[in-house]
Length: 196
Image (cartoon, rainbow, N blue to C red; front, side, top):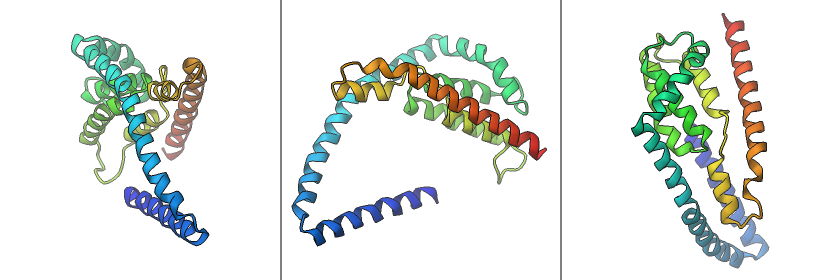
């Protein structure tokens, strides 16, 4: 449903833009924009791709070497407190910690498979299959507002556009994502306590 709605919004904006261009006599601007922006989008994609591939590869190496499992085992005590309804030996906690690590490295695309597997595992222990459990909601908050230590995609964009100091955003990114995580998890905890 949400995907359809986003599709409708984009279609509406495109149609309004075309109608406005026709009425104001700027139809050539649409043609120029389509051709120019398509090339820019491809250039941007080709500039970002190597950095994302590099970090995804590093994450795969960390996973294959067992480093990710060791990091996951460090996170599990904290995750057990954050997800009290999830048994300590459940696979979901491993997938959640993998998702957190990938998000910390700014690799949303690499975090997605672990996040989907975590949700599947959480669904297996969900007593009400037609609605999200408290653990699922907490994981969604954690995933959405997760702390990012290395904002890989933003760094890649800044490098692609020749920023004089692309890494200057690392500290603000850490502060912003840490604040959003604390705020989101605090609100989640408060709502869970109130609903009990």
